[in-house]
Image 1 (cartoon, helix red, strand yellow):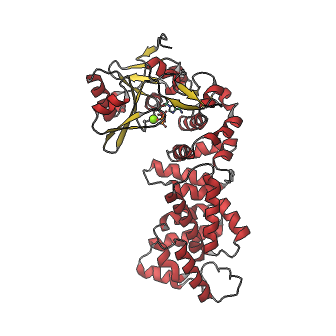
Image 2 (tube, protein in one colour; image 1 turned 120 degrees about the horizontal axis):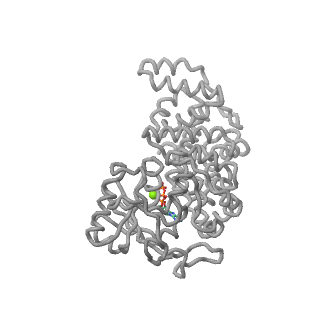
Image 3 (cartoon, protein in one colour; image 1 turned 120 degrees about the vertical axis):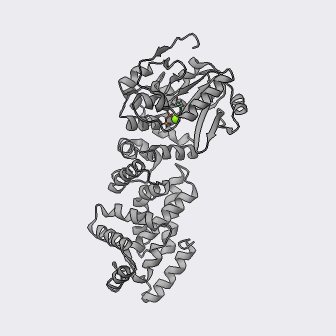
Length: 431
Ligand code: ATP
Ligand code: MG
């Protein structure tokens, strides 16, 4: 590989002010210590496309330990291949050492999946082991040149995602690359090489071999980086969605609306959480279980059924507990929000998940008049002052906005609510 001579181009639209000062600082320090260092990957690709890069990666011929020694606020991460994370406050620059492309040092398992990949190389080697041609462009900040070994400049211009090398082989090495393709295509409005799309079926199956924690990270990148709706639309009718979220209904309006809403929130710098998206993606499954196995909506049983929903999902993507807890609380509050029981209203409003649960109710209301009215009631309530709130509560018809179904034993209302509170407590509702 080393004999390949790259195309060097100054014909680009990347201006110094597009670049991150901390990344430039890393490059400067590496240069001062006698190493080569370049911007690489997504930041070069995005800047060429006129999109503000979200993070900056640096590639260098310094070994990970050498990078570590140069930067006080750095640490080495990654088992398969160590890279240095250099921290500047909240900004993180990833510094990776040039590594070899397909090589004896790469260990693959029987299916061709890369399990270990530690051999270092030069820039040409490094370019060829990257996934897409548009992700293998280096920017030399000193000479102001883009360095291209793989036709990436041309592919950026043609808005085309093409693997370096044989698609089947590259996907066999790492099936997650297909999810990356879908994400980059949605984000940059690129077309995916049709040869890649031929392998969706087999690649979807092979995602099962990928560590579930890595798929959680990929889930975050797919749906929490500002392009959730186009990503969702491109995934939902493919077998990939079955591999990621097997119990999710791909045609759910709620999911698509929530994805759009998430993108809007990110565009407006509002907070987003994976817990909310989990609540959305798994809602239909949880609801179906409730209908079949808990028609009386007993809180304790609802808790168990929520855990069943998560257990199925965990077989595909690992879900940190704080996010399943979040989703469950949002679900539990739906009943409360719909019921509008006067004596519960103030407690519901001060619940720490009230805001998320209210947003969830509003999303559900987009295609359901009754729920929309309920959402509007809660909106008005939040906007109201103390006196108006009291009036609103007093004018709720007896039995609440929605009459709760009586539980089977024919208990009177007071008993039912005492039991309900107890189960709520046991299920963590008030914790
Ligand atoms: P973004 O940061 O916008 O998600 P990115 O392309 O920078 O996009 P990263 O995950 O930050 O993606 O990876 C940085 C670079 O490392 C990529 O551009 C690519 O060159 C290389 N890379 C990342 N993941 C893989 C992979 N699975 N296979 C091959 N190369 C990869
Ligand atoms: Mg990146």
